[in-house]
Image (cartoon, rainbow, N blue to C red):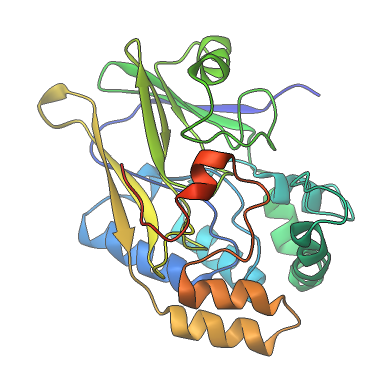
Length: 275
């Protein structure tokens, strides 16, 4: 299938980047307030996909996202929901804990979305591209080649560079792996702003996003933490037929398991994020 790519042309001013809302309405509400405080217009707010996921309010989250007017690409979850698939498309190992958990949260999300929300999923592109401070940026979910690719800080630059070259980009803005990081090589940048729906296995309930800035005509960016009403998110998850392990992560900031993580990232569990 041909990729659907939306070009925003040249973008200026601050740009808010985030991923993995994961049906976490409280986190999305908090991030929207940040954008308004920083005077970042909705058209400069870009999500790397997986608006829907582990938490308790998929329909409400997607409604707020549409009302806000922020932009997003397709995450693997949106693709699977759009196509009526029976699993989330995360490519978890069969029989793993993550696979078992997905058999609870994915059908829950699938059952909660309205026909209007399913129609909205059909409007989302595979990638967004734009020029910013003289650089070409491409937004991907996993990688340019596969929406479900897990790309981490420890992933080789050779692997990352394949997406950089194939998309003819200076900057790749990516999601999916759940961890914020940056990797800069040979004048190119791989930037993962982090996700706002779940903490990044660092031992705190805070979540992450990033802001691009073109002040003085130069390309710069900074990661930020986001505090939100995680106690409400936790309570709502416990009241829904969802994995209690994911609800616990909302409180503790520690993942139930590290099945998807490479050894380097596994070893950093609970030690905070170092950028």
